[in-house]
Image (cartoon, rainbow, N blue to C red):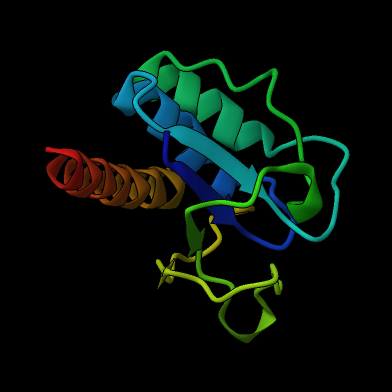
Length: 132
């Protein structure tokens, strides 16, 4: 099973959303992870709330993880940290260049979530095409 890791410095918002959406949309066909280089006490409360409202996904059990806490991925995606993205022992396959919605309005947050959904769905479609 191919593994996909979404990486951000804090692993508290965008990468957590991507992990949850990957699991939600892929139906167990791929292993999705998220991680960062700095642990935070809890993932973003707005992300948890909006993911529940939009998709019915409960991210309450997800937690911040370090890059060393997850298996080495087949595909590594940076969420948009720019020059501050953590080094994970290999290059990133993609940088999605997403803004961090932390502290922004719900409209901005929803826009970022929609971008993540489009990219995750596209990634899953690409992987499904490779497996056929």
